[in-house]
Structure formats: C-alpha cells, structure tokens
Image (cartoon, rainbow, N blue to C red; front, side, top):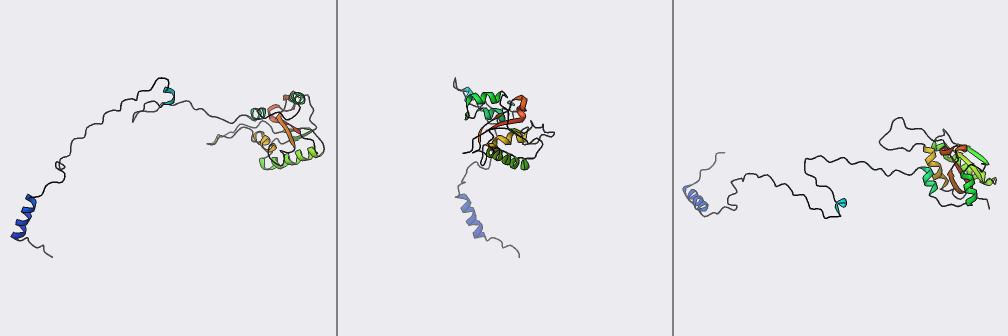
Length: 199
C-alpha cells in the first residue's frame, strides 16, 4: 500500500499552522550541563545535646565501628537473688552457707530437657507429699558449645531451665524458695529448693 502524497493545499495549510504555533516549553531542546550538587553543611549541634544526635555522615564514607553492647540475660544465680525472700531469713542464710542438710537429691546431670522436666516434676511433688522441706536439684554447670551458631545458646541448658520450671505450675505451688547451692553441694551446678508445707 503506497503512501498518498499531500496536495498543495494541504502543504500550504501545514505551513500556516507551523507559523502560528508557539513552543510549549521554550528552550527544552537544549539540555543544561549538569552541575555537581553542593556538599551539605554539617548541622550545628546545640551545646549539651551532642550525645543525643547522630554524627555527620557523608555518602560514600565508611561508618566508624562502635563497640557492641549486648544486654545478655542475667545468670540464673543473679536472677534468683533478685527474687523476694519468702522463707525465714535465718534459715535462708544457713541454707546459703550450706549449713542445712538437703533431705532429698535429684541428679539431672547429663539428662535431656524432654526427660529432665517430668523427672523434676515427679521429684518435687513427691518430696512435698512426703513432708520434706529442703531438697537439692543437681543440673551440672553445662559445657561450652563446640560450634557457636548464629543464635547464642546459654551455657548449661538445664541450669537455666530448672528455675523457670520451678516457678511455673504445677511446681510453683510447692516451691517456697530457690537459690544456688553452696559449693559443698555443687555450687553453680545445683539448686537448693525449699518446699512449702502441705496443708
């Protein structure tokens, strides 16, 4: 299909339109040379407030590494020490010094979590039912992980879990006080559990 040629009248009309047409954006056919952007001026920091503001940072510069501050969980001993005293203060001090002899002992050392929890529950409830007041729960101090992973794992899984289990039902109603044992009974690797009297 061949294109039709314009007639002389159409050409004349087109020239008239061009002569009376104004450009929408005059000068848009020329592209201005790109100028470099001015560097931002560092913001003036009011005196006395510099610690709350971020340091000036320019694009392309490297950030200064800051020392990492981890708010790690407190050790089980520190967490237990912050608990309020529920038992007689004199008896508590004697217990902490290893002067009270435990009436029963449960050794969880080397057990897995899934078997240690039911064993602890049975031991505490049966000890309370038989009228015992002070028992010893041995967890072991735990081993350092050979291969540290992306998620930090506390050393001594049972050492961290046992106080939590003792604070939850069904054991919470049986337990009056929990504290880390004296070095003669295992130190960091064991807990004194002082039981409530059965009513």
